[in-house]
Image 1 (cartoon, rainbow, N blue to C red):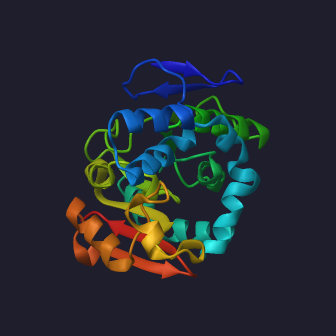
Image 2: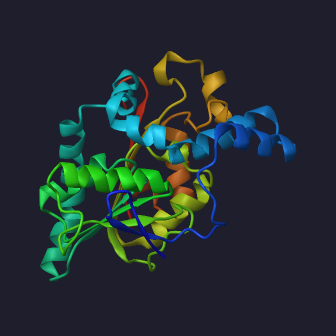
Image 3: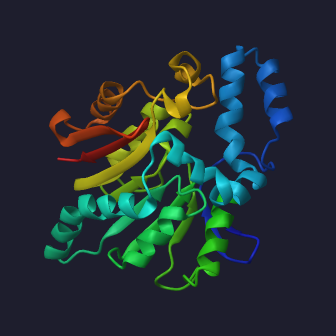
Amino acid sequence: LVRRAGDGALYFDLVTEDEQPPPTVRSLLAGAVQRGLPFNNRVQAVGQEMFRSPALSFFYERGWRQQFALAGFRPEEEEFAEILEFFGPAVAAARDEGNAVAVLDLSCGSGLWTRRLLRSGVFDTVFAGDYSEVMLAETLNRLKADDLSAAGPTAPIAVRLDAAALPFQSGGLDLIHAGAALHCWPNLDGSVAEVYRALATGGRFYATTFTTTAYGMSPRLTRGGRTGYKFFEGVGELTDLMVAAGFKKEDVDVRIVGASCAVVKCVKS
C-alpha cells in the first residue's frame, strides 16, 4: 500500500493492521487494563507505541535524541565514522563482484542516520524503515529540508514495516543499521532473527542501544521493561541475543561505550 506523507512524499506501508490512527496513551492503558496485563506490561505497551506520536516525531531531533549523550552515546560524526568503517568490507566485496549495495536503516526514526547514509554516497540503495508512520513522514520532511531528494532514483525508499517481519527476501540486504532501536522492539528475538535472515552472507549489522544503568537509574527499575523499553544487562546478554538469532559468536562484537551505550556489530558468515 502506497501512502502519502504530509508534504506529499510517498512511502510504502507494509504493516498489516486495521485502519486506525496512532493510539493515545489513554487508549493504550485502557486496552492494557482490559486485557488484564500486569502494571509493568502496561507501561511497556505505552513505550512500544509512543514513537507513533506526532509530538515525539517532532521533538526527536529537537531535544529527545540529544539527551542520549547523558547515557554515553557519542557525537554523531564519531559514531558514523565507525559505521562506515565497519560496513566498508561488505561494500568492497559487493563492488568487486559488480553488485549494487543496499542498506536498511531499520527503525530509522526521524531519518537522522538515513540522511548520513545518503550523504556518504557509498550506497546504491538506502531503505528507511520504521513502524511509525509519523516518523517516516518526519524523515521525508527532513530530507526535503536538508536538500536531499525525497523523490527520484537517488532517493531513499521509505517503508513502514515491522522489524519482526521484514519485507525483504532472505539474503537480500548487504547491510542493516539500527541506531538506538533494539530496546524499542516488542518482539526482540523475532526481530533480530529477521535481521539475520535478511542479510546476505558477508552482510553486516550495526546497532546501538541502552544498558540497564542508563541515565544513572537503578537496574531494578530499567530491566524487564519497567520503563517501557527493554534495556540490556550488558555484553553477555546482547551477545547471546545475536547468537540465538543465528550469528556465530566469533562474528559478534559487543562493547559498552561511556556510561550505558551498547554498540553491537555482527557479520553473517
